[in-house]
Image 1 (cartoon, rainbow, N blue to C red):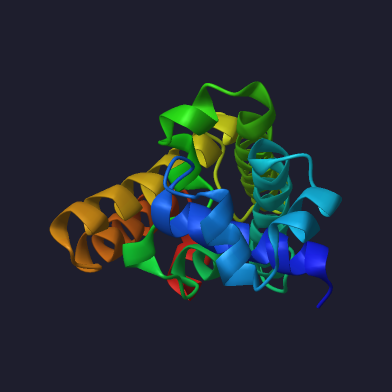
Image 2: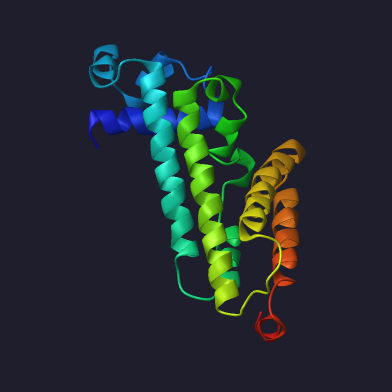
Length: 194
């Protein structure tokens, strides 16, 4: 791994653990095993490096989500696979935690990868829901974009509930509840198959 990638990866982890303010240039350098000169050779400063780390986290989150959402099976099965995939629940969502960081939210450049990732995820879930409707698997109903937004909100809220309870169970309950609601959207024939 080259120096730039080590710096980005270290920043990703530190942002996830400590937030923006708690992630100092010195901590990044120590975690990456590089000196100050190397950091400033590759990045203009902490904001530039943090933006690169957030973009990388967003790309990774999208790639992980696409493994399930673009995988085999019907719409319900793909969404179920996405919602049930293994996560580090008590650490929270790498991107979602940044949406709660006031310094990230206050900076348009830092906020952009967070917004873009959630926009992509909501749009991709809406596409899968629409595919399910066109295939007759899911019944017509609320706009797909609204259902997709609700699914994303359930996941993000589940992380918050789990972290506040210091238990993964609230997250898993939220996911099970979302799947039960989504299952109610299945056509009668498809409901028997799930």
